[in-house]
Image 1 (tube, one colour):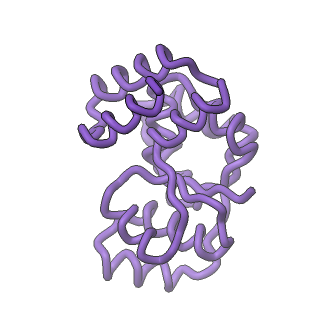
Image 2 (cartoon, one colour):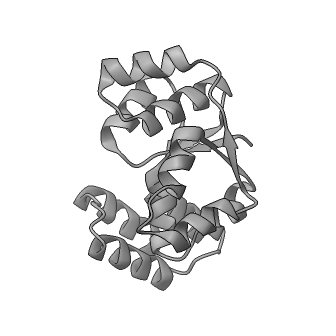
Length: 164
């Protein structure tokens, strides 16, 4: 399975102390260089930076077609990380792209790329019995309290699925 990730899902998983879910669910993920550098370059978060650098399941990958990245970035207004993640996902015919940002998801969806966000990963982790209902609710509280936007619709859908 080929899985590519943008920055935000990995940051969200680190915030809730569940970065290991990536390894449990997917084995290995690919991150384009721009995403990798977003994750490891912020001097305000040395522990998180070290966690990413030392994670054996996170593989930094170069995007072959930089012109496509630039074209996508300029035509959509997406940032470099999102643009590289979408192009890498397309380039490698990934099975799934991990992305949370609405605009990036919309562009990726138009390109026919299969998407999963942080909430989707938590739901799969629940179904695979890596997380309990209570753990998911705690994770959502942490994400909301740390400023992550989770739409009411997405939250209600998640509750329906884990209360089933």
